Length: 133
Length: 133
Length: 133
Image (cartoon, rainbow over all chains, first blue to last red; front, side, top):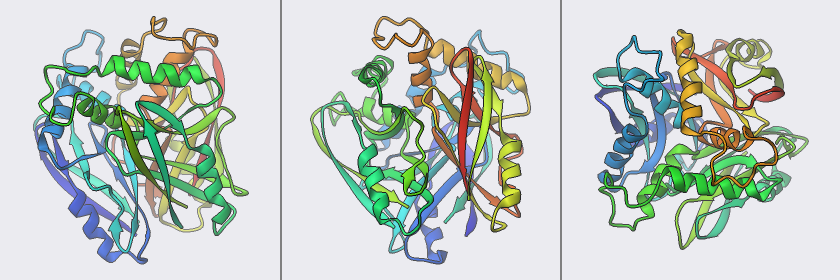
């Protein structure tokens, strides 16, 4: 089964998609299996992170901006704006695809785990995640 | 088939789990397929790395501590100890899930490759990895 | 179905393997499913990145060299040359396995996405990627 999760982003942010991913399993053909998510972009990415305390997400985003500042002199790909090349780097350092087993139609996430789309660009972007299960 | 690999960690370390993963394939329903590992934590993660020379693992751990030092002024998530937020960052920069094909019930790892749980926190932590195959 | 993609690398570089991956699907047993790639090395890795403008690939490579310079004093694993330990670190920070859904025997990549082998070592290296689909 292949489905699409659409996410509209606004600025650099982590958008939790755990519920959307879990809800897809209502249409799974068997009770247990593997959910694989794939993001169709190279300036946004996927991560599994703590979803209990929002300060974790805040710090992850700020630390990534600290690691990959804009306007570095080594950048030659600058035509799409100062946030574009850092976005590609941040996407490279995180994940394009993530797989999570499920049982009894429930994702086997840990107690504090959530699935997140990590938007690395400013502005508004319509994002697509393909789910295979 | 879904199974769990449990690992008890002691301090920041790489724990090789290649044998545990390989042994699961004794109960695989077919001779070839895909083993997917998913870690149920956000302050420990999974990597595939060289398992021949332990100095590689030593340097990986030290370099990560060098890249993500504790007590950075940008951290606001500090309530769970100085090693917690760096652990989340290190988990983000490595992998939550890894997939390895197998044939003749043998993981198709390269000659020098091993599967590792990467513990990013100090102290003792019981960790769970879900295996789907 | 399990197949191997062989790549001969020459120096640190990104080698696009999208076409090789797509071509494998001609022999897929069903029209839709999941292609998983796994690289059998720990000093080369896999990423999904923009394949429209080569300057992105150029900047990704240079930025990784900037993040992980050779000859750092904390390295103890130096016997395989100055580019070896940085290569392991760069592999750790990117991916060993990537999964991409396909439909109508077409990889569901985004418009600007390509699949790349990221060679982190200098010199010539024969690399193997295992494909499961």
